[in-house]
Length: 387
Ligand code: GLA
Image (cartoon, rainbow, N blue to C red; front, side):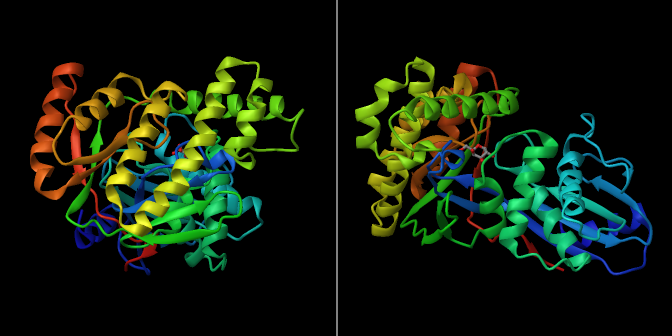
């Protein structure tokens, strides 16, 4: 929704007066490096031009009011002293989690009114949650003059998701959303948080995001289970190495010692992680060198590993990616994000994009009965004030 229309909606809902602030916070797409962030590896995401807009204003009391144009209806009101997780208010929990983290740090947060409007579906796996969390964090930081650096806001938003929402996510989403730059992919070392911004020069190609529109019911519980399985692998490898995370092992060290992982599931998970980290580093090299064909091939390998070893794809994602691989002008295609439904990302020759969307959509509908949605993704800026 356009900013002016949003401002009108805001005043209609909450009344006029006072200084209003406007923010945009992007979604993200991960090009490669999946389920590596919480294992101390590398990821290669980009912030999107798609995302969430928010209009916000301070109140002179201790009430928080939240509304969204995507949901409509009245606002939800919560006292600053009654912040607790409420399952029925799914999207509000992301906001409350951020407020709670400000409070945990002893930072002064007062009452406010917020209207959000998002142009990504909340279940697509493009990090609409991190988008909303970072918007809230940036807005609170400015409104209440708490003067935290963006990187501190990123970590705070991740803690909100871990502690308040209960998803043990890594740092990738909040980092990509908070620190993204236009037309740049980010090679992030998830241990040191050192980030290299790599220009994406598409050279006649585009990124197409395919939304499977398939429910991601397992996203919370399945995600946490994968994380535990990786931790189990680390414990078993520890008899030979002083490690706390899988990412601390080279592939050669892993090959020598993988027999120590006696649980077959944990061994499969670890194998994915070790080689996905390698693929991510190689993919960054190909991107720097402008070798998109080699980059695309690594995307394909990543998907196969996520399907066969990490087992987070499922019928919807596999059907869409398999259909994509058969199309003309496709350099690479894979699932993106946590998996269990959600989106795919494909690197496609621009001249073939129309046929790609039509054909993949058709095959996907025939095989799953579900209507897919496609977006040609622009790479945008991180969370920022826009008015
Ligand atoms: C979700 C999490 C991220 C990351 C990905 C998988 O998006 O929020 O931290 O682990 O899944 O790569």
